[in-house]
Amino acid sequence: MFDCVKKSVKSQVISGQREKFVRLDSMDSRYSQGSEAGLSKCTLNLQGQSRANGGTGQGNNNNASSGSFKKGFRRGSKGLWSLGRSIGLVSRAVFPEDLKVSEKKIFDPQDKFLLLCNKLFVTSCILAVSVDPLFLYLPFINDSGKCIGIDRRLATIATTLRTFIDVFYLFRMALQFRTAFVAPSSRVFGRGELVIDPAQIAKRYLQQYFIVDFLSVLPLPQIVVWRFLYTSTGGSVLETKQALRSIILVQYIPRFFRIYPLSKELKRTAGVFAETAWAGAAYYLLLYMLASHIVGALWYLLALERVNGCWKRACLLDGQNCTRNYLFCGNENMDGYAAWNTIKESVLQKSCPVNVTDGDNPPFDFGIYLRALSSGIVSSESFVAKYFFCLWWGLQNLSTLGQGLETSTYPGEIIFSIALAVAGLLLFALLIGNMQTYLQSLTIRLEEMRVKRRDSEQWMHHRMLPPDLRERVRRYDQYKWLETKGVDEENLVQNLPKDLRRDIKRHLCLALVRR
Image 1: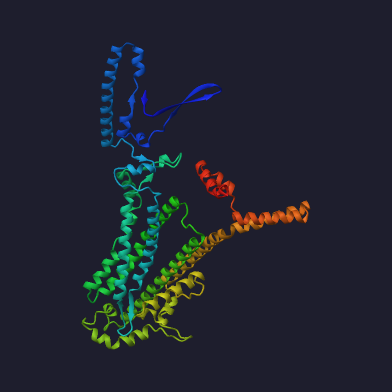
Image 2: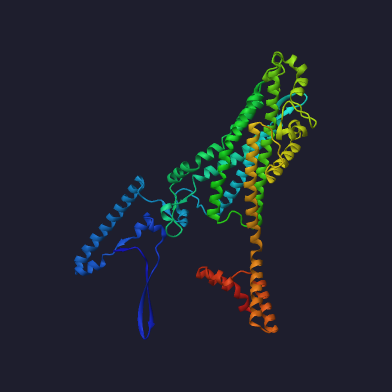
């Protein structure tokens, strides 16, 4: 039979008789994978067969034949191993400790380095969806020229931030091709086996989340902005504004969706997303503020679109002296612009007035965007003032579910208000529920102690214990709370492995033994 283990024989005297015990050392996990080292240690034990045949000569012949048979067996096993690896018959599913001997660098999904990287990647994804709304602030109204332009300074800052964040996320995509995963068929018993075959890892990633990651890091907004900054002409403001609006809103879907697999992976490997209750509460509060930031940026862009729509309407009514390109900055050299420049302020002020007294019937109803126009943020050159005003508007209306909004009859404005109310309801419920869960976990032990103390008082009163015994019970409860803080230490230690329990008891009792 195969002799793949080491034997050590011990003898011990029991009841006046000497008994022999044979200890079998555990096999190395590398041998179980069919490695060449394991095959070289496996030999055929044919000594019993040589003794049964009897005779020295016959034994020598058998030994010689067994030696040749061993060599042939080794060569055949080696050949089968090479053939199996070449055609992919050998399993590349191993346990985490076997990753140290793999041919290529493959990471364990529960490795501390990957846990830290996943937390950084989640942070980068949140920063990415926070930077993207900055592109919605790029268009602004030039009051002096009565035209719509692009903020070049903000465009440079936004594209630089987005590029750095996306380059950092490319490291996450490369890391996915070197991160092992647990084989689904091995999850029935134990911790499962890790698949370390790079081909299978790449195939799994390409079939699942690669498309989402690839679409989310495409530098489409950067290309549009760089094209405007370095090759802009008079009519490129309109094209840039429309392209940025479409790209940012469409690409926001995969950039938001990629947070889900990262959070799921982090919860599966670490067990929890936030290690402390305060961190969990702060995380959901941050998401609520992020939603307010997005809503404020959308409100700013839609307000500017309503102004653009009103201006186009006034331009069509004027007819002879106006074209749509005159409404965008950089077209001062176009034919006929001089005639429009002399009448544009009066035409636009007459058709699109902002400061209208109560009781007057304005020619154009801006609805919920009137506040953005009357405050002057759409024409402000200070990004800080513009950003915080829109952030406050988004936070206020998300918290109040849009109750103070007075909409016009414009369908797009009504749809935005409905979406704002529904999103505010869902996000507010999510925020309150999760923050309550996290904050209650801080005082759950204290509440359990109060319940136990109340039960103890009721029991002592029911049994009519004397005052001295009651005081002793109270002192014991107080002592136990100060020592354990409400944690059931005995049950906690009993659930640990035997060697770990021994080390913990040695640590806790060492000082007492020394004294």
